[in-house]
Structure formats: C-alpha cells, structure tokens
Image (cartoon, rainbow over all chains, first blue to last red; front, side, top):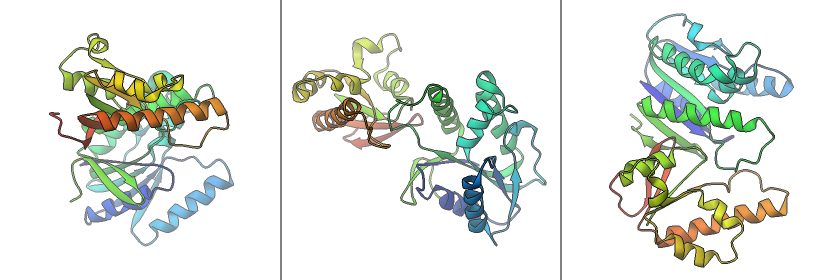
Amino acid sequence: MLTLVIGGSASGKSEYAESLVLAAGPGPRYYLATMEPMDGECHARIDRHRLMRAEKGFVTVERYTGLAGLTLPGPGGTVLLEDLGNLAANELYSPAGAGPEGALDAILGGIEHLRVQCRALVVVSNEIFAGGRDYAPGTEDYLSLMARAHRALAARADRVCEVVCGLPYYYKGAEE
Amino acid sequence: MMLITGPLWSGKRAFACRVLGCTPEELSSRAVWDAQDLAADCENLEALAEELSAREAVLMTEVGAGVVPADPAQRASREAAGRLACLLAARADCVVRVFCGLPLVLKGECAL
C-alpha cells in the first residue's frame, strides 16, 4: 500500500500522514527522515516532529539520499517518509545526491525499493506549484523534478490526497 | 468549453489529450493552454473569456498562491490570471482541476 500525502506548509500534512500510519495497525513503525539538519531552524523543526511522534512507537531512520541502498531494520512494518521535498533537494543538490540527471530515478527507484520492504508506505510531500514560477535561477529544475516525481508517484500510488487545514481530500483511493 | 486548471506541471495537457482523444500535436487545434499568460496583457478580460469559451478546452496554470509579489507588474498579471479563471469557469460546461495527473471535477459532468 503506497499513499502520497501532499500539502502546503503547516497544512497539517505531517499529523495526518502519521494518523494513517497509526491506523495501519500494529507492527514496527519507521519514521524515515530525509531532512539533513543544517542549522538551528532545522533542529527546531526536527525537535517539533520528534515530539509529535513521542510515545507512538516510531523508530527514526535518517537517510538523506540514495534510498535504493536502504534496508529497513525489519520486514512487515509501516514507513512514514518525510518528506519528498527534502529528498528531492538532496538528490539534486547534495554532493552525495544523484544530481540533475539521476535524481528522478534515484527518488522513484528508492521509493519502490522501500515499498517492497514494508506493508504500508506513506510519503509526505509539498504543494509548491500554485505560486507562479518566478523564482531564482535553478529553482525551476527543482520544481520540475518535484512535479515529475509527484505525477509518477501519483500514478503508481494506491491513494493520493491533499491536506488542507488538516483535512484530507482524496484524488485517488480513500481513507480506510 | 471545458476549463482545465491545476498547479504547474500537474499533467493538464496530458489530461486534455486523453479527454479530447487527440495527440499532443493535435492539441493546439483543439485547445488553448497557458491562458494565464493571455490574461497578463489583456485590456478586456470579459472579451477574452468570451473568445476562449468558444474553444473545446482551455487550460490554465494556477499562479495565485504563494506570497503576493512585490513587483507591480507581476502582481497585476497574477490578479488578471485569477480573474480570467473565474470568468472562464462561469462560462464553462465543465471545470476540472488536475492534481499530480489526477482529475477532480469542480463543476458540471465530464466524461473522464
């Protein structure tokens, strides 16, 4: 079961995605963190998310690039990947990433590699496409990568929803 | 006329080809896309909306979210795009929003 959860900043997408993992039943829960902490703001954000996951039984796995090389600690679990926006940026810009040519394949291949290792995979991503395209040079490469990743994942996902004010709207599939 | 809206690169043209039953090459004779750009320099949005509503399908990219631009021209163009979208939606038989390639019918009944 692959679920794509998309929302804007502070839309409540993390909490909602987490609730989907909790609803998926017992079994190991893995939180796959893709944001590489760079500064105090990152650490503050990570602390906030760690607090939200407290006592919910999540094992945190940090991986910033190359998901195809990641083996989960055990089979049959549920994975919350948060988030695609950071993963895409890392694959595109990080020295350890796949770079512009390989980023899309690294993302899609990595997610497929994860999906077959678990019972349910919930991927959280960011709605960044309705604010025009007048950004600094280079940003369009990132937008394009994210758009292609979204469309490809949406096509293969069992469920796709957008979260607005903490409320999900399902474009594909439904909440169980 | 079918209005097809959605965020940037959400799969609007691929959807239009599918729903109109045409190839990407044939789409220009069946539909207009990037209508938000037509709004930018338009003196009369009502007249533009009338003209566009004669087409089978009109495609627009949503540009009105995010921070309001500091530049007056950019501000005006995205304002015009939003107003044109409303005028077109009022005239459309069917309005579809495409999100990550997946259609959501906002108005009317469309054979998807």
